[in-house]
Image 1 (tube, rainbow, N blue to C red):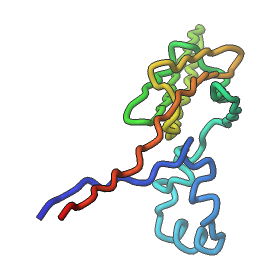
Image 2 (cartoon, one colour):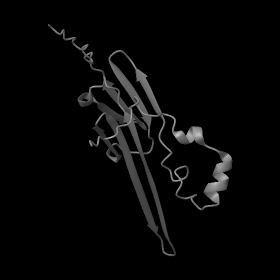
Image 3 (spheres, rainbow, N blue to C red):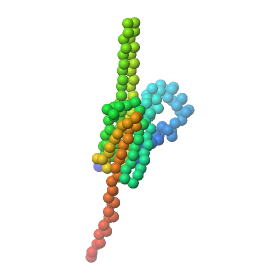
Image 4 (cartoon, rainbow, N blue to C red):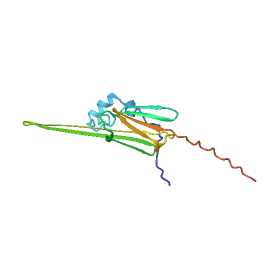
Amino acid sequence: MTVTKFRKRRRPFGKLATPEFFDFDMEDFFENRLRTHRFFNDRFWNGKANQPALNIKESDKFFDIELAAPGFEKEDFKITVEDGYLNITAEKSLSKEEKEEEYTRREFTYNSFERGLSLPENVEEEEIAAKYKNGILRFRLMKKEIEEKKKPKVVEISS
């Protein structure tokens, strides 16, 4: 018996609309999530479903991707390309403390997101470039020529 790894069919640039968007049922939400106390563990509420907006433009030679991520700095991002996927993560925390004679005030914020895109086969992964300016993370993905698969050779059987 041979065990093979299951690999999901890749869709270029992933799913832009998540299954939660199409499968949301208001009655199910109130019946199950609130009654069974899964409210705070639910993906709908814990922030993972909240992803930054994305624009993709295609030309003959490249793809341009714009990701809205205001409030971050260039150093807050981690971008990796692995096995045909572009993974973008960002994390930022900020804390501030003021001490006066009669009180101490502390403020802190934390913001993060993760976004993954399945890249088309015709993207040159080694040539991906990124820039961050004015809250927009921009990528340029250069296209490459894909070699067409050769037709199978028909072998004649001789007598």
